[in-house]
Length: 388
Image (tube, rainbow, N blue to C red; front, side, top):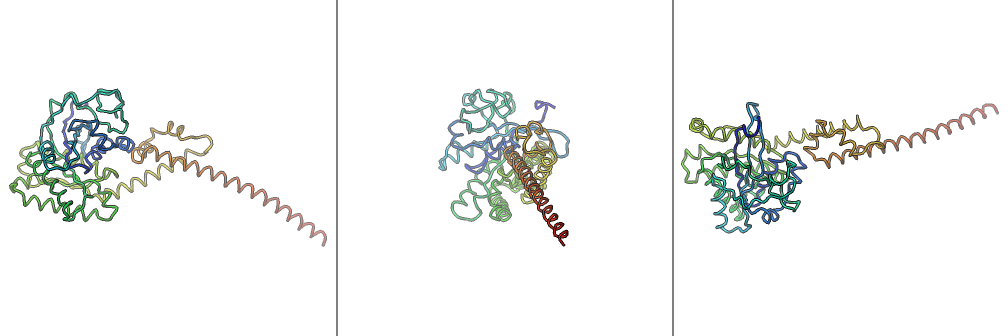
């Protein structure tokens, strides 16, 4: 089925400066590690090069887990172009980020003769001659036909802490001041916490994620929202890491269910809590599964090298990659670890082969010398026997 025939959903990614909106969008669009790394940029470069307050990252075709059908997601990031933390700028951002109509100024979208992530030139890209700029794309030509937001991803930096110091409380209050207007839009919302890998490295992930969820629930109770609104729109909370690619794929399935529920009036009336619709994946469990998968991929890749790369003299990385890059095991390994890491392990294997060859040669020399020594000793023993 072509993209034009698919049900499409426009997802607006919102959040304060520095919470990881761009990294999340990049992971959603670029599933391969090399593509994700190559798209990394600094916020300074982005502000200098992209003047539009709304960035279009691209679209992703996703098939539901039950395999019923495919949908098309358009991911849009509501950016803050001003670093100032002034209240006026924050209020302006909240108003813009919580709108359900996407307005695109065509004059601010440049067209450069640079290859985009799809390998095409110019028309589909908002790229700069600066190679560090992210691979942002043009809004689709038919985007104005359907420029309504179908769902929001509201991003929060879990590594910002959970204590009640003035700075941390201010960050949570700012997050809440953005979340409340989003609830009033009646659009589905998924709260995504980022940078869980940072707090996990300090053995705080479970504690901080639980406290954050509790603070969100407590904050809803104290708002002016009606009980019905709170029950109807209490968003699910998913804990992720863009850097480690944890729980990113789960976002698609959750968004599908949220958007489907939102489009069905009867379902919305019967639902008492959107959070209860999902079995939200655990960050820790997903991390453990990823570690097992990675170890399996490494073992399989090493075994493939052992079976097929037998001589370090007649094989280079370029030759090996040219021959094997379409192998499912190689493709999967490079998708997760990157081409550079695959080359490193390949060179390690060649080094092991060379060392094995050196050791074998040394052993051969030792054996030859031992044979000579044994012959000499045997001859001397025979001579001694004759003399007796």
